[in-house]
Length: 364
Image (cartoon, rainbow, N blue to C red; front, side, top):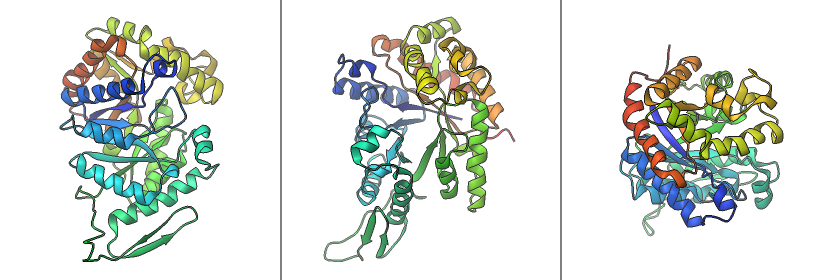
């Protein structure tokens, strides 16, 4: 069992003009440094362009910076939005990150979900097709030898033959098995998770109810088997918010009256229910979407409590979905209560994680 953090970053204070870009960057890097120090296994950085409350246009820059202040933690994007990059250039930046991190890099990719970002780049509704085409080019650059050419609808590559005059093309991934790709999904029958299965990528499930998570695995595993891959639950990453304190009462208070509770109460729940009309992805149909509240989330969804309680909740989630390999918590805006949040990371890495060392990926 591994644990990870996901730096979106949530930045309502930046959006309100109360924090600077540099302060947002420094907080994400501080969280990643704490995660590394306390034995948390992975840290991921998002990519968004137009969202003031989630500012992160350069996950590759964040990974590069984090690589210089950490030692053991795996660093990745969740995700590089392929529709917004020339895949030839991105393939080379990814290889450079692989070397810069000493092989501690996962290349998370996605099509890009926000209409405002698509408007900015002028991609319209073509993002999913652009992602698939870009993936073909990424994998060719990493894995093919000799000259080759790919002409697509959106992107192309014309790899020259090796020339002694320029001693290149020369760059290859560092990791012996190649750079691992990871793809994210939210809908029960996510087309992105289907593509992940088809390509043998790592699947990352967004924060949804366990009944939806079961469908995520079925969708991914079916596509993987049909493509000739052997799906491994140890690869499966699941997102679920975590807060650990010394007691259940303290942890609940830090969420209800802290940044995590504020985010869910004021942003996440209204977004799922009122804007996207996908509240059932959180509730699993147990209650009507309009009845969702932070209190219900604390009792039924979020993983909050003492180390003993959190470990028990993680194991219950693990058993309910048939096993998984990594649980990833979003990182929250606790700058005004930094020591409590640092303590949550410490307890997660040093107390909760050892309690779950017996979980190896699958209950079967």
